[in-house]
Image (cartoon, rainbow, N blue to C red):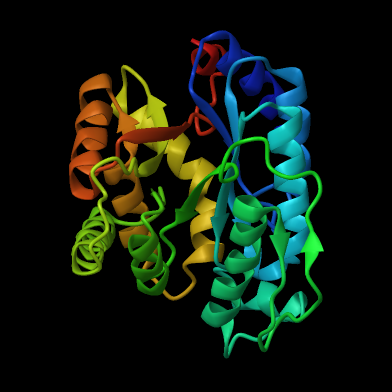
Length: 292
């Protein structure tokens, strides 16, 4: 049912001339169904004609960077530039251990993985020689269709990643389950670091993910959304007061009546300065309302 809903959403998104469709990576949890977002992105690019398709958070620290570069360049070629590589550091230490990656040097690994991917995008070749990867110069085939490689953005998953992105001028994706206070802190940090390093970010378009559930009865919308995210909150925030986190999510996402949801979205946008919104309507129980 989840995959069917995703395909139906992709169909409508393409028909209604939305700009981008993003696929979320998730492992070993009932809160997601996609462990291979680039595979799904390839399928969605094949079934659509207009919309750009992105991996929302391809976890580059748990995948081989050359494979990521190969697949991304292939999707870029076959879609003639409609693929976007949205990537992330790993947010779960359990996943790092499962994929046999060291958590002690996680950020350094993230950085080196991206260097390899970016070299492949910009030059068509890579030749790393560091503590994590060392191999002779290779050609990554096919080379990218888009000059400089597919467009990229990165999840704002930590202060380290935000600072790293700011130094390079990469757009951030602000998470739907972060608080407005967290988004505001990350946005401010990004601007400060970019300015300190002389990076022009006037054309950078940050993205904000929001959970959406609109209903003429605001309490119905909140009850539906609460039921939808309850298991996720308990799993993802085991050391946080459940009711406090739930109240934060319901008030700081686009949930409630039209007036309540649009006001919440407006405040969230102001906190992080996002130029683009990535919306999830999955918390709506009424499928006809979803399609509308």
